[in-house]
Length: 131
Length: 307
Image (tube, rainbow over all chains, first blue to last red; front, side, top):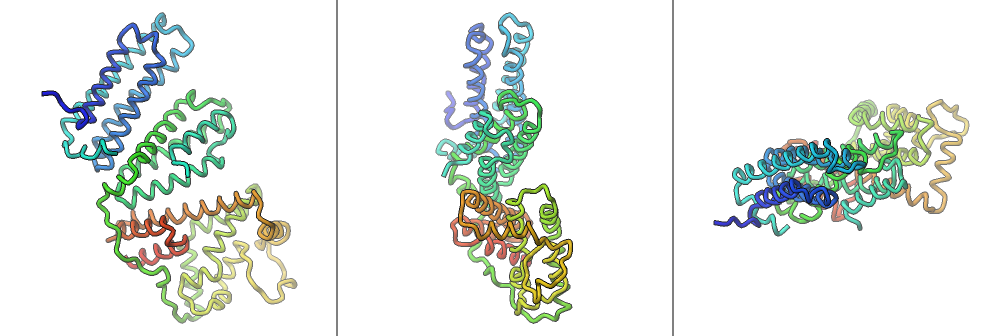
C-alpha cells in the first residue's frame, strides 16, 4: 500500500534526498552543479522545518540525530563548492571524489530520516502540514 | 514591522555589500538582537526549552562568527566564510520556520498562564532604623553586584563613547537612584535613603546626581564625574530631539526590553513552583503593553521572593 507522504514528512525528506542523490550520480550533474547546490539548500530547509517541529514536540534527541546527519551533509556541500569553484569539475579527480562524499552523506541523511519515521509516532505530525 | 528572518537576511545582505563590516555592532544587528530576545523569551515561557536552546545556540554561533569575520584581515563574503555561512543559514532557517509556525508556538505549549499576578508594588512600606536601612541597601547592592561592576567599568573607561555612557547612567539611576532604592525596599521616607552613607557611596561611585546642601563649595572627589563629562551629559539631555537622540532613545528602549525579557526568562527558568506559569502571564501582559518595564521587573522580583 502506498504511503501518504503528506503524513510522513520524514519519508518525504528521505525521498527528496534520495532523488537528489540519484541525480547527483548522473553525468548530467556536471552540467547542473549550480542547480544541484540550490536543491541541496532546499533539502536543508525542509530538514530544518522537521527538526524545529520535533523539538517543539519535545523530541529533542530525535531532532538532534537528523540535525547531525544534516550537518555532515551541509559541510560536504560547502567543501564541494569550495573545492570545485575554480576548476572544470568533470576533469578534476578531487571533485569527482568529493561528489562521492556528497552522495554518501546524502544517503546517511536518508537513512536517518527513514529510521526516525519508524520511531516517531504518527500523531506527532498532526498539524504539521497546517503550519 | 519586519519579521526576524527578514531582518537577518537584510543585515547579512548589508554585510555582503560592505555597508557594515562590523555587523555585530551595527544598527541592523541591534534590531535582530532585539527580536531574538523576544523570540527566545516566547519559547521559554511556553516551555519549548529545546527550541529555545537551539535559537540561543545558533544566535551565539552567528554572533561569534560575525565577530571573527569583523576582526579578520580577510574581508570575505558570507558565502565564502564557512563558519559565517553555516551559522547565518542555520539561524535564518530556524527563525524562518518559527515565524512560519506563528501561533503554533502557543498552541503546542503545555504551560497555562497564571490567572493572577501579584501587584508590582506589593513591597510593603515599613519603618526602618538608619543602621537597618544601611545594611539593606548594602544587600541590595550585593544582589546586583555583577551589573554594578559592569556599569562602573563602562563609566570609568575613557574609550567608551559618551552615548553609551549616557545609557548606562540612566540605567544606574533606575537601579540605584534614591527613589528606586526606596521603592524596592519599601522605605516610607525616601529621605532616609539620601541620608544613608551606603547609598551616598553608591551614588558617588556611579556619579548619580544627588541634592546636597552647599554643593558648590564641596570638595570634589576623583569619583565625582563633574566637569566636561557631566556637562556634556546635561547638554545632551536638554538638547532638542535629534536623529542622534532618537537613535540613542531607541537603543535605550531596546536595552530596557532586553533586560526585562532576561528577568522574565530568569523567572521562567528558576525551577520554582508555578514559575513558568507566572512568567508566561507576565510575558503576555508585557508584550500586550499592559505593563511597563519597571512594573514587569518589580513583579519578577516579588515573584522570586514569594515562590
